[in-house]
Length: 141
Image (cartoon, rainbow, N blue to C red; front, side):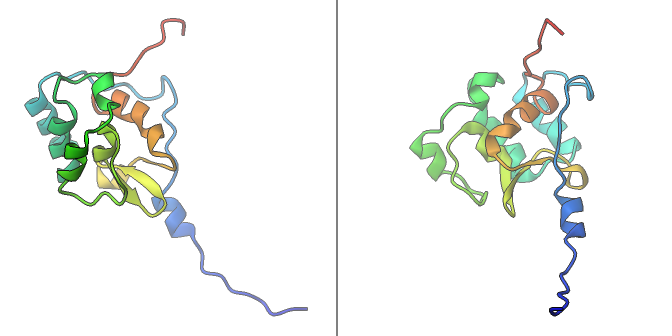
């Protein structure tokens, strides 16, 4: 028989970075708020981080729409970023994310209930439904 290996438990890490599944119909969507100042204040009250709250005004320069959230950033906008997100920004929603280990965490969620994803593109639906109220609804279901 070989030596017995003792490995530290990663139980704590698994608890802090649990996957988030936004199942349709399980959680209600947030009400749409077109006013950027009011949207920033609501995000602050819900426990969002400062870097993400200030980014809301930069991401939605032409109104709170799904296209504005997924638009490609210009080189000037990327160079003007004042927060280290842990990765290079390329789309508007990237400014609302922060790299946590090997996953991407939502900067607008409260710290104790922070959503995270393996791929940053998976966060778009979360932002649309739970933070901006611009989610697309299916009329068939």
